[in-house]
Amino acid sequence: MEPILEDLEQAKGLAALQAASEDIRDHYNVDHVVYHWVDSAGDQYGCGTYSDAWRDRYLEQNYLRVDPVILGCFQRFHPVDWKRLDWSSKSARAFQAEAIAHGVGNQGFSVPIRGPNGQFALFTTSHSCDDKTWADWTDAHRRDLILIAHMFNEKALELEPDRAPEQSQALSPREVDAMTFLAMGYSRAQVADTLSISEHTLRVYIESARFKLGAMNTTHAVARAMSRGLIVV
Amino acid sequence: MEPILEDLEQAKGLAALQAASEDIRDHYNVDHVVYHWVDSAGDQYGCGTYSDAWRDRYLEQNYLRVDPVILGCFQRFHPVDWKRLDWSSKSARAFQAEAIAHGVGNQGFSVPIRGPNGQFALFTTSHSCDDKTWADWTDAHRRDLILIAHMFNEKALELEPDRAPEQSQALSPREVDAMTFLAMGYSRAQVADTLSISEHTLRVYIESARFKLGAMNTTHAVARAMSRGLIVV
DNA sequence: CAGCACCTCACTATTTCTGGGGAGGGGAAA
DNA sequence: TTTCCCCTCCCCAGAAATAGTGAGGTGCTG
Image (tube, rainbow over all chains, first blue to last red; front, side, top):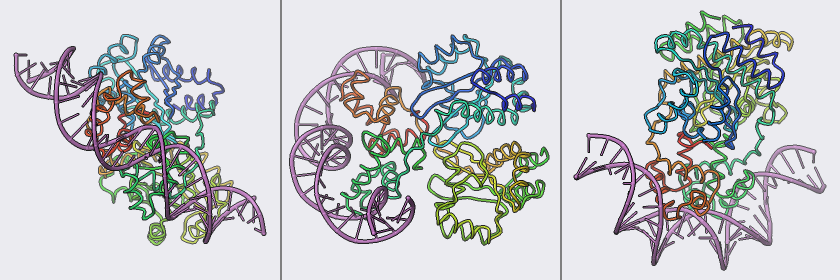
């Protein structure tokens, strides 16, 4: 594994990252190696060995919101084998069939990586083989893959600093309180009561939080505060 | 490193995790090894080699909200050397002085680990030595530490499954659409317009989503949908 | 084929939020 | 010391969301 990591650390430019994913694929002898980034705004960035056709199709169909790999890993802490995801819904099965038709393997292993402000990325390896073979392979390389995922992500961030945290303005303690209780379902009156302040005062906090977060309404402000990790519910 | 990871994987029970942190400390010959978890509710869980006195003091003073290591890592993607954190504020310097008085090293290296729903943990090694020695040490073991941090976190989660996220009822596609656009700040009228349905219809989706999520209002429903990973914003 | 979940549309009244103002005191930093 | 941000309180009118009930069509599943 070592030379692979060295190559990754030396990589300069996005083309080198693309080449690195191909190197990793060849080194581990799998069908595909893919890095997929999802922005808090919903923007995506990916690089890897999937075919252009599949990538274009994926973006065009906005499969981000259907893909069980994304949805599953988004709720998980640890790397996951695709077999353990939920493929039961109709849209998921249709998606899977289409993916396989585009050359994506029937097996897969994805490492979720998270950053501040709701940043989220996936590092995936995929292959066509039977379950036993795949289980052996993932067992053997699980640790390598975690480490490579991190290095890959670090490199990708370094090469595209645009995606670095928009360093959203921090909220004041009272604003955090307000957002937190609102996210917990309290009405303004209840929040004001809980914080033992007047509802008018509370409203000032909500408004200033909304302003700081660039939100159009309370729901939006709470959603942004959550996705940026400013509040935890 | 290998035997350390093996020990970690074999660990059964929280006491074993405590022992593992001591093993890691001895293996790498540093002063302290600490795992620190911050719960979604603000609860904390920690284990490691800091003194009981310091741990108690930390909890009692609620240093969580002052500790530059927590604050800094919470905004960062990658492992960080304590030197690169912001220790300039008065409270931070007071905290640092007290920490060192309690035996915490003047040097430190912390790996942030994140999970779904804003879950956050830190894996820290700390030591007393000069800058050069510490830089050499972290350079040499950076990769190990990332991997150990992950394994440690995985194990800690496994041993305390309470902290794992709860599964919830899925939303219908239209409900997902509604929640997604609401989280993006659209008003009901705008969402209805975007989805090309009447606002009355939209309201039915919002209500049924609210019901499914056990939410008391729209903001609550969106917050829950987000924290359960049902929508990606 | 019957049940169930989903999608679509409608009305009315009430509660809640939002958008503009304005004002004073406190603390920390420059 | 001055400036800036934070916390606290107040009014009002208009906009938006909610509660409660109802109804019809589609499509899958047992």
